[in-house]
Image (tube, rainbow, N blue to C red; front, side, top):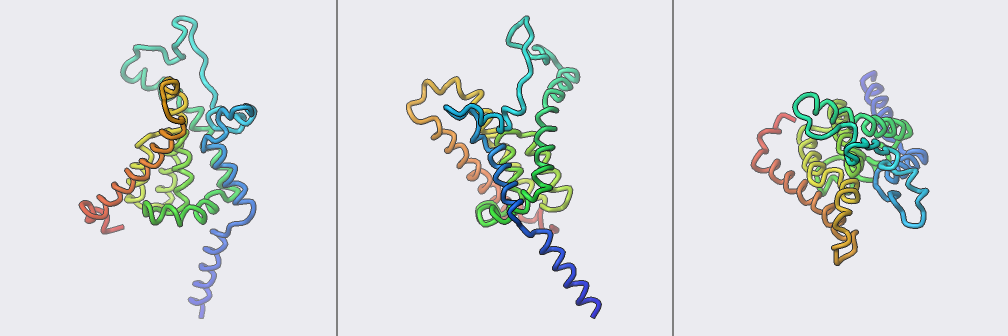
Length: 227
């Protein structure tokens, strides 16, 4: 009798944990808008950039001599150069993790799990709550990696899930941010709408992750038998 009550209580706790209310959906919509890049440099509505992660992350100032260098400088090597590079990543990573912690508190992960599982489970074989890490990676590879590690440490995803997510994140890492900052130099030479290459790269991220999943389920299947 007591065992039945314990099982029933556990079932109710699990149901409550993944219950998705209006606040969770609102939180998910906000986090999608902030990290998706949809609000980045919207023509005619520049004020929307105030709600975009790249804009919120800002930029370091440049040195006067030479004008193109940041505080990191140029020509640095070894540990000291690596330290300055790592230091330059701290503000955006802290900002991303802080925002995600707030959105998670209001149920964004629960909403993402319910919304994205029907998409991610058939395509990549991973649960829906990994969607926030994947979306975050579109603008910040470091924050996406940190969120992936957090999911793994909390045992919400397996090693196989991490490898598949890594394949998705590594191909075209920081896609939106890099595309509009680095790739913008080629926009004038494009003979097609600039959104087409972006969409193509986005689709290929799924193709690469799906191929990785196939390889893990065939050639490396034995490596994950104990999971």
